[in-house]
Length: 302
Image 1 (cartoon, rainbow, N blue to C red):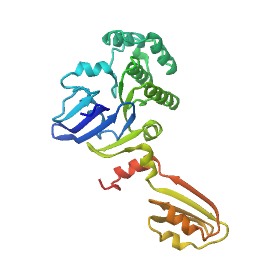
Image 2 (cartoon, rainbow, N blue to C red):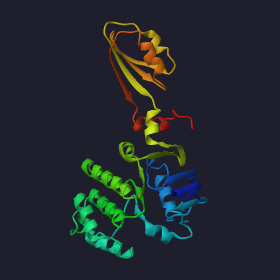
Image 3 (tube, rainbow, N blue to C red):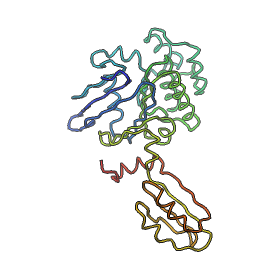
Image 4 (cartoon, one colour):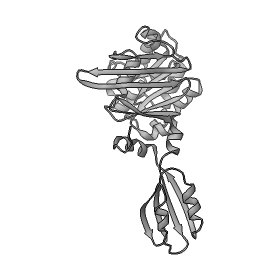
């Protein structure tokens, strides 16, 4: 296993009865990076994370977490990891403060209580009311704080912004960026594509238990299709543009405007446009969401 990796997973296979949940999953997460694990519900994200922590056992494959085999030393892994499950189950007669004190004792009283209060205040989390009175979003905040409160080396977060309003989602993303800035590795699963695009250094897309793409987030966006809107200075027929390699006409606004879809390099299109009286030229890249949907609609041959 490579010591420069915080997480290294190789050929992970997991069955639930006849359901093949993970189909040879490979993951390498470098120390200090934010890594997004992207896929819809049921794709295998939660199963992979639970295998990493030895909460369930795969049928085959190897796992290294911070250089440790979690099947041989599960407590050593849990000591150094902050884990947010998809749904945190706690005694709902307890308060958030009591839950945090409980987790702190389990971890050898390593947490700074001022830091716990700071995280809670940023998330507008009430510490002294019984959890049974909490909304789903406030229960999610408890899970986030307990994962972050001991400043772990590695964060494993399953849908961290689930049930949160947009303002709290942004605050959680800031917390993850700060954790990375302090040296932590952040691995988080999500089906909210915009948040992965906003904070992840790299992203893995999982489909039906298989990793179908791993890429630097910026590279994945930069190699995608663009939409190009062109406005001419006068009515113009420019049919040769639609015949260029990788160029497709999407719409004509009128005789002076066109919308194109361009795959690959823009060089040929720009050089061809030089002979036309162009008044305005706008480009827009496909979002990570559009790339993701391409995989799940079968447009990517993987």
